[in-house]
Length: 183
Image 1 (cartoon, rainbow, N blue to C red):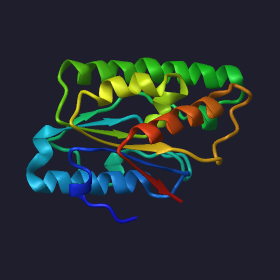
Image 2: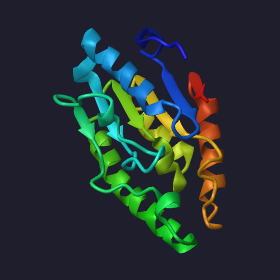
Image 3: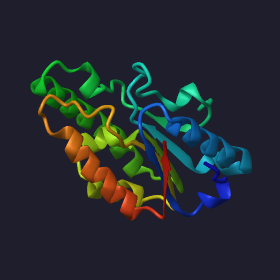
């Protein structure tokens, strides 16, 4: 996939796709390009990704140095479908993630920046709506995000989060200026 920093600035761009296709790596590449172009002071990175489990997950710091940047990350982020043993576990992990992510989003809301970068935003969409996320995104002039969208993590022990997540990501795909599918 070929996209440049100039195609991102001033727009809302979502990178989405299956596990392990390079979403976070592309997100880091484009963010680094914005930093090299002198936009580092205008960027907030919100990292919603759980730590890597196999090919799934992975924080943006695996691909770039965030030193000197406004980098917000919840202290704990779970991979609900990978860590759970039943539907109750899934729901408990989702609820914990939402509480932790909303603390970070409130920090951003209190002091938004021109550029907002969110890694693995589908973690938030396990328990919230695309519209709730858009509320925060609209505080920026440029949005660049990554999201899981696939079938690999479909097993959710009957909790319903996989179908809910898919519907919310599809709303976001329709809302952004440019959606980039990686496969």
